[in-house]
Structure formats: structure tokens, C-alpha cells
Length: 253
Image 1 (tube, one colour):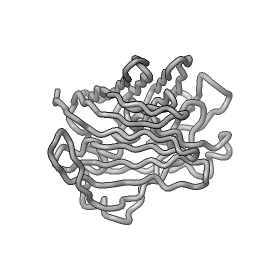
Image 2 (spheres, one colour):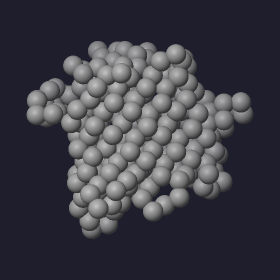
Image 3 (spheres, helix red, strand yellow):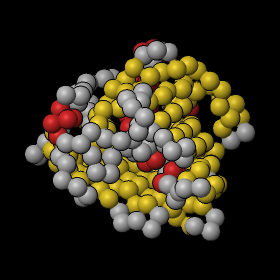
Image 4 (cartoon, one colour):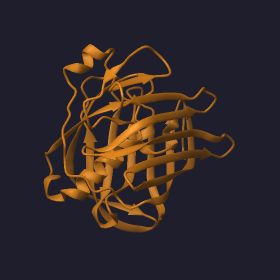
């Protein structure tokens, strides 16, 4: 995985999404969608991605492994990214239940290279999202995601209603990061050809709509012929840093 910055670029794409976030519960209240959509979780699987990245002037190649599990009313996503010389550069985990909105995270953890782990906690009893870093809190209204779960929520929504994921359509979700949260809107671009494990497949390209120059760009490709697994994810920061991960192989569990 090529990870210039020691960016957690190397875990699941979601983990890398470094989007900026609104500062405070009140700011988030005005743009906090709670929408129930048809949901069909992709089969549990172990996935391996090849990673290229540019971070803080460093260019690194590496790999990311992702364990996706869904069943019995719960889910988990555990990702780990490694690069030569550096070793483990990023570790992330999202886990929780599956409810009427789809994935319902209980906790999100991110451990970056040489940094302390940070967590976001979704307190279902008090309907509040809080963080291990900072004092921001946000209300839980239904459908909230974190940076790891969001790509799997999108995959599950697309898998359930592929006819609705047409070019030009937009999909809004409220996403928690390391210390705050904000609305992310994904726009469906078009179907493109992606090379996965040496074979070319068709994948639906979605792009996160940016609200200002500080937002990171997130591109996501979902493969209909592969149960809508995320086959490529690209994160680009305003300063030019990026993380590009492409699926190399996967095994259903």
C-alpha cells in the first residue's frame, strides 16, 4: 500500500475518508438525514486490497486486509493496513447491529501509525454519538454511519435496489469520523471497468459531493457482479495527498 503520510489510507477506504466535519451538534442538526432504505448486506468475506498512496511527501505501496461479517442481526468490519518497512500503519474497526435503517454502528475505532487510538461511540440508550477526542456530541436519529461502515451501507443499499442507483442519483448519510460528524452525499457517476485480480469487471462509480475546499474527495466503486463489494476506493485530500486501494482478491465466509 502506498501510503505517503502514514495515512490510514491503507485500511478500508472508509477509514481513510478524511472528510472535514461540522463543529457541534447544532451545526449538524440542520443536515442530519434519517432515511430508511431497502437493505441487503453483502455476504461475509475476507478481502485483500493493493494500496498506493501519497502522504506527507512519502510514496508507499502496501496491502490492506478487510474482514467483513454480517448476520444474526449484527455486523463487523475489521481492517488492517501494512507497508514495507513501516509495518502496520493503520487499524480500524466498526461493529454494531443491523436494524431497520441498515448498519447501526455501536463503536468505531481507528489506530493510526504512531498515534493513539481514537473512538466514536454510538450510545443507543441515550441516542447520542460521542468521541474519545473532543467534546462534540450528535443525536442519533437513525441511519448514522462511521467512516468504515459507510461503504458497506452503500453497498447494501445498492444491492437491495440496484435499479435506483442510476447515474445522477444522490445518496445522503450522516457519517462520524474521529472527533466529529457530518452529512456525506454520494452521487452516482457511471459504470466503469475496473481490473480486479487481473480480470476486468464492471463497477458503479460513486463520488462524495464536496461542500468546500477543505473536504476530502472520496471515490467508491461497487461491483454488481461481485455482490456489490467495494472493489476500489480513492481518498484525496485538499493538500494533494491521496490513498488509492483496489481489490486484489476475496474469499466469502
